[in-house]
Image 1 (spheres, rainbow, N blue to C red):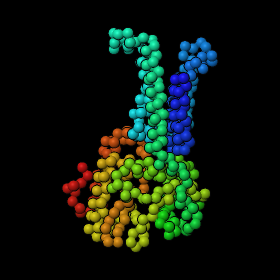
Image 2: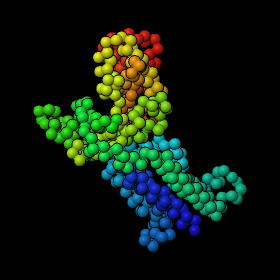
Image 3: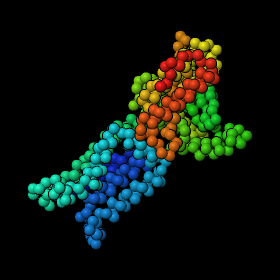
Image 4: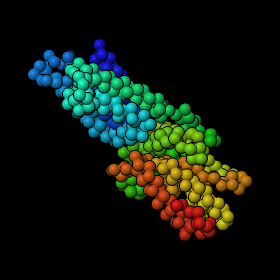
Length: 394
């Protein structure tokens, strides 16, 4: 009876992970790997059923356990683009101790609990009898299964707001009901104003404008490969990063992010991002920090923009923001002459192979601090900012 309860518990936990993997492609490799680890744990409860299948083995559940682990590795390799991202999402989840203890309690600690020499080492009394050790082993496995189920449920609860991002954008229909007016262009993407809806949309440069006479062959190949890939499309990645981190940011940072940032799909242009469209009092779109400070003739306005950037950079460093590069600020000018900064571009995860800064906040802070110091120094030297540096980034 107890074996059946343990088996059912861990199978439910594995099913929850499979369900999350189906819904969240960006985490699929990591979630499938964890689900297979759960199934490997469930195989440990099938000894009686597998004895007739492997009569010559002392532990007949071992082949099935190994098979599930191999399957997990194979799925992780198959979905390798999402494996590291999924594992990082699990690593950063506040419920991680439940998962770690659950795996230990169903794998290593049962062997410790039934080891006679362990009981002899901690007590000279007749407490380490065979029956007592069997009960201790079963208790360890049962508690481990319950912890794994508890973690799976709480993980989905914590991430539910992110998981529902798979639902199509509620504003996608606006792309086909209003005129798209180009308001900005980079080396790979174009930003369009969506009529007078208060939104803008960013897509890769249209296919007919990606000729050999207009861009490098490497950029053309990159755009062609990523345009309809929900996983690797840069606009799609921006939405993922926005949804992943904005709930954890303090209000000082969250208020500078667009209220709306949604993944949309165009039949010709591929995946894109639809965002709140910020405009200055004269109706023009806000522009990146460097361009705005370069075009300002007033020294006081330049200094005001510079001060705002310095304050914002300090806050981003304090929280070890993993989605920001110093040059990504856009400047919003108020009708009363005030200046505020908006974060409308979100950097995907670090492209380094070993991403230590993703699990060690101190490294991320140090990285941001170095970049911020260089960035502010460049602004002072290149654009004639005269603001005092006595309270610069420390």
